[in-house]
Length: 176
Length: 282
Image (cartoon, each protein chain N blue to C red):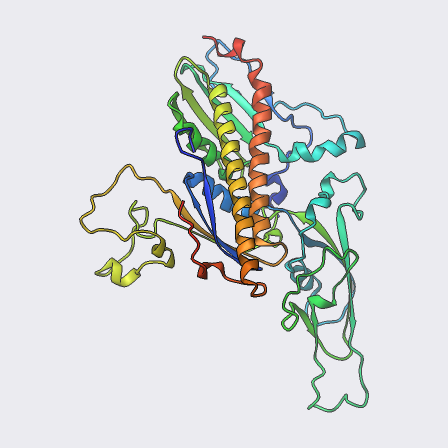
């Protein structure tokens, strides 16, 4: 009866802006909420692009008023899959002083990523670098996988034992 | 994974079968390997029956019971990229661009000669092979024709007539859309990192033993001091699919989806970043 729709885990609701820019306020306001509601133009014209919007995470950046070079990123409709990867990659960066994420409530499908850096850079820049490195990492993993797939398939065809050949019986030099 | 790691992640496929695949992933962080596992389970899109219009059902199972079973039938989804999500499609309700129609009509006729003969087996098994698809590329997985997926059993006088609409989706919405039956994920079989704390009565080695993957790593030297700087590095992953797509396809699509997620985030960041000069100044 009260169960929320499952597609809310990943679909951005209509009328919500993909991302909002919260300006830095001087009067000590600690945390702006994040999502600015802007009416989306409806109609079939936008429908073709809607898929890209609904599957991309929305991002809100809130600079921290009390701590220098710190910001909170709120990413909608994403979970630990993305958050943990980003956090681990940020921690590899020597310019990052603090990086952590949390999901305030499992029924609210977004996570908060808090980043603090050294004064010579800023959190958005550092996150951008982390994302770039991760894309390279995943891309390289995909390439290696495809290459090893070609090798594995050619090994299977060499033996010519029909489908379902278990390659673990072939001792190929596979130490990396 | 950071720039000091030589070469980035390494993949070595140990076994490649029709429905399952074993591979070893090295030189990446645990979070990346786990993200790959999570995406393979929950975010690789497949086709599954999502709506069922029942015209006649005089079987012993209720409408919703049969509809649930139909939803769980794996459908071949190697061509799923061609199909759009129904929520993104320009049609109203559904169309061949965003869905596939499957029909089923089974009527077990009463044979008045055999009606009262108890020795003749009149039970008709309705299986996934009875589902007729409008699109050849999306139909129930039927690798093992000797053991098809059973939907319902019927007897003379019963009839089942229905129309199913299969749609594209991800397991985040419902587990029926998951392309895998199970993913085995292991790292550090000798527990050098002490990530596992085993419940024991007396002896860990005797009571728990080691997994098959331990053959790939050097055994623990009892005098070896604990390496507190070590991080998980080598992951033994086995992917078993439902037959809807090949296991290597599942892994490749999962990596593509991870890239898309990160790419989308990067685009947003670039947009925000452009206004950064006035924002970060203190």
